[in-house]
Image 1 (cartoon, rainbow, N blue to C red):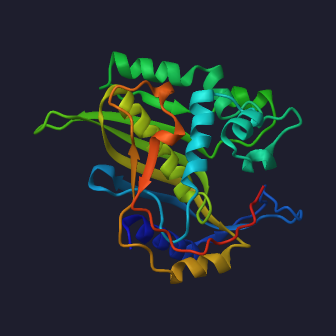
Image 2 (image 1 turned 90 degrees about the vertical axis):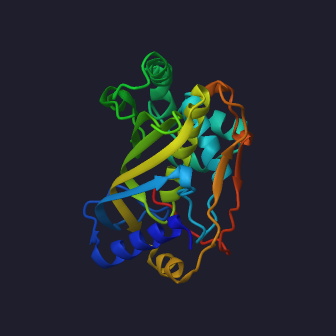
Image 3 (image 1 turned 30 degrees about the vertical axis):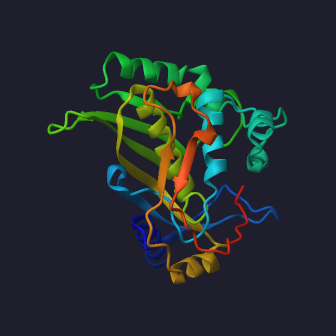
Length: 280
């Protein structure tokens, strides 16, 4: 199994054996029933991307293309309008969280645009890559009070630049902090997305990709997914470590990078795909 597969199984086993059941849960299933979950608090993993440790499981297929398109919608298009996500990229699963105005509210991409988060972030890195204040933060209470909408799960990313003392090459490290994560459905989607974001920023500045640190505060499995969890524990994943490649030259502007510039190589997921009824 790959490094990511081992972490995946460890987390599933930990939740099933040591997790506790949620109380007063907000989400619900499509049939209206409350979506309770079993969860653990404080899950952390470190991936050394330079050594080929990439956060995507091979125990089931992960929709990498849709995930990267969603990332572009948030950080390049900088909007929460679902028509952009659906018409431009063909990604439609966010419709479940739509408001009457066809958006997901003052959230995600709309927050990025309102506060000029990417502009300020890239400008700050250009002025001083070595400072310890290179942060993307989507948790803005002012925005939450402005409209209804799903609060961001993967809400904060911290970046650090370091120079290798032997080669003098510059590396970009990243830390993703997530308040809540669906272990079976979204765990590797979110992690992989933010590695892609890390790669885009590194390319923008002609740096190398370094380490990726992933912290989830509430890591859970929904109560209609326990059977799928047991199936995943039985599976044996690929022996090949998948690798995400960004096929653009160093120095390519962040906003000029496209979803098709990414290529996932040596990815051999176990099939068939499992079915999950999403909690809304």
